[in-house]
Image (tube, rainbow, N blue to C red; front, side, top):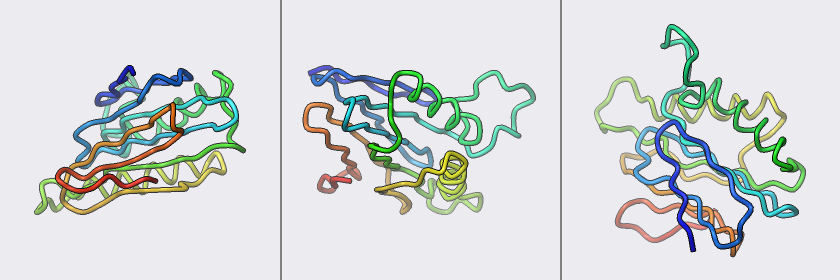
Amino acid sequence: MAEIRVKLAEMRFSNKSEDTLVAHGLGACIALAIFDRTTSLAGMIHIVMPSSDVQSKNDHPVRFADTGVPVFLKEFMRLGGNFAACKIVIAGGANMPSNSIFNIGDQNVLAVKKALSKFNLSVSGEDIGGNNGRTLNVDMKQGVISSRVFGCPVIVL
């Protein structure tokens, strides 16, 4: 089995049954995973910030929810993904550090959901918020998307 790590501001796709897409160490960041049961195509994007307004030039759109989610979804469709047969899951969005007044995690969650809504899509499963980091996995062989808060049992989404 090959583990495909989706690092900060990256997106990855696979249609190989032996692969697992994984985003480790999700704090305030959001991992958005999509899995098409009919084509066995899965994708994951690791969103860092809610809005690209903080950068002067749009040189890394995948880093931001408002620009990254559309790029991600268009690539999913280009690779043969079908939204009608998809499971869409998000994980992350923690308030880290727990005393942060900015709460980027909440902003990321809202921005990802808003970007999905522009494609008439919504989240079918989520593991978000709190003050702890997470890992999100897409097990291609089983067709299962799961999340795990550090030190806690796995949650199947």
